[in-house]
Image (cartoon, rainbow over all chains, first blue to last red):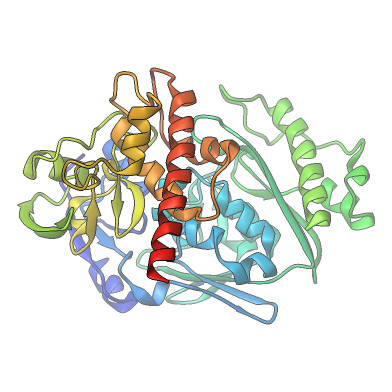
Amino acid sequence: MYSVHYHRAISVADAVKLLKSGDAQPLSGGMTLIPAMKTRLAAPSDLVDLSHVQELKGIKVSGKTVTIGAGTTHFEVASDEKLKKACPALVHLASLIGDPAVRHRGTIGGSVANNDPAADYPSALLALGATIVTNKREIAADKFFKGLFETALKDGEIITAVTFTAPAKAGYEKFRNPASRYAIVGVFVAKGKDGVRVAVTGAGDDGVFRSKPIEAALAKSFEASALDGVKVPASSLMSDIHASADYRAHLISVMAKRAVVAANAA
Amino acid sequence: MSDVSLTVNGRRVSGTVEDRTLLVHFLRENLGLTGTHVGCDTSQCGACVIHVDGKAVKSCTMLAVQASGSEILTIEGLANGGDLHPVQAAFKEHHGLQCGFCTPGMIMTATDMIARHPEGLDEATVRTELEGNICRCTGYHNIVKAILAASKTMAKGSKTRTKRAA
């Protein structure tokens, strides 16, 4: 790992100031950034540690409104009783990230800011029509995820929370890479006030995306059988050593069916 | 360089390290606690699992400075003098190791797992929870047996203690 300067932020305002030094990057759980620094895929001059900033932590469920602090770990999301009632699909999703030790450190804010094309959370936030709250503004998930590892975040902007309205029904299923646990295909389906929204991670060649043919079919009938014969185009899907675009297209409809079954069972 | 001060296995320790120093290297090289192993160095194998503030984490994926101020428990801190911790005793009894390289991480993961499942464990849960620990001798079968046995022993132990307290 290249030499780096470490700074520990005690508040969001403090972090914003510290981020002005050199080519600084925020560090949350570090489950992606530290491995990326070891392999020299990332080489920030300075790290601003957000993991001790108390105002970024915690889960609030008030009526149908769910707010999750950016510094909340996957373990905390996976084991929160109020959230389990409000949106069990999101709790299930968090329990599938990495492994127990990774879930103890990794945070929702870090995952969302990194926008790995195979990360789980982006699909949930897009399907739930969530809002990403930063120290400067609120950004709709539809406008936040911009492509592979690209987001609407500007320099010095820090995610403070994500918030969404609990859906009537939601489900998440993923076909995992057995080594990395990242999604080869992950599908989040949600039926809420804006109708049915379905987001796919792990498969798109430009990152997380909404699947219009699946949404259209599920809007007519929110049952797995509604997806029989629905064609998912392979044209904008990834092909790599793990799966071809055609196989991913097939997996999208299989995972979507399973997610609908899970949503209806919850 | 940064100053790091930690409580490791109940003992206050401090040191000055380069900011890029990984926690596992601080434990092994500065403190001489070589029970925590570096297997893959890519956060996959779990040989470096320790507890930071009561939670199992991979110490190869955390900077020593990040952990400053925390309480750390490593494999060296589990036994009570000459008495093995119930998880260590179960690994010995059930032959839960072959070469032993993954064992410290397996045991630290197991103690965290047992603590998070006071209701008890079944085989499927143990195998799922062990996802982040790799054994290249493929000794999982006896590792799972050992964890299930330790979980039972520890549940009995805590019941006896509760009775005594009552």
